[in-house]
Amino acid sequence: MKRVEVKLSLPVVAPLLDIVKSAADSLQVDLAAPQAMKDIEGEFRDAWNGELLSAQNGDLRTLLALFDSEFFATGVIGFDEENAEAIVRACSAVRLRLRARYLVGLEDEKLESGDVELVQLDEGVRKAFMCYLFLATIQELIIQHLDSSIIES
Image 1 (tube, rainbow, N blue to C red):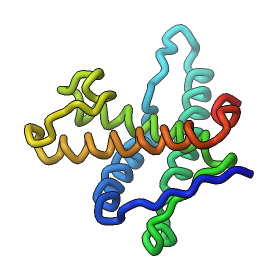
Image 2: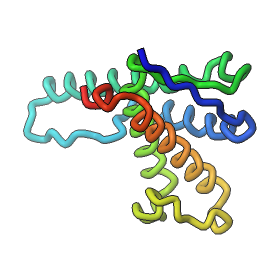
Image 3: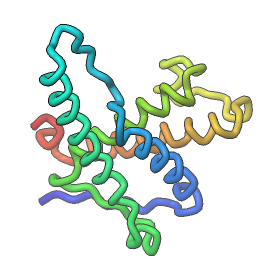
Image 4: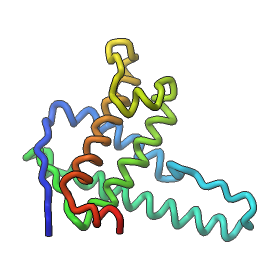
C-alpha cells in the first residue's frame, strides 16, 4: 500500500487546527453543501440528508484523527489508500465552511491562487485564509502523490 508522510511545522499548523476543529464542530449538524431537494417528500429527504451528514462527519473524524498525540510528538501526518478519499472530502467540507463564514469578501480567483494581501486582512480572516490554503495543500499532496484511482473510486 502506498503511503505518503508529511512533516509539518507544529508552531505553524497548531493554530490552524483550532480553526479546522471549530469548522468541523459546526459541520456536525449542517452539510457543507446542502442539498436542495424541495420536490422530495420529507421522510426520504430527511433520511438522505441524514446519510450525507453521517458520511461527512465520518470524513471529518478521519481528517481530525491525523492530528492526534503522535502528530504533536513528531509533527508527521500520513495519507494512504484507506484515508485519502475521506481526507480530501473533509478538507473540501471545511474549506466550504471557511469560505461561507469567513472568506465571503474574497474573490474565488484570489482564494484559489493565494493572491491575497495578508496584511490587509483582519486577524480572523487571515487565520481562516491560511487554514483554507493549508487544507488545499493537503488535498494537493494526496492527489499528486497517491494513485489517482484512489480518488476516483
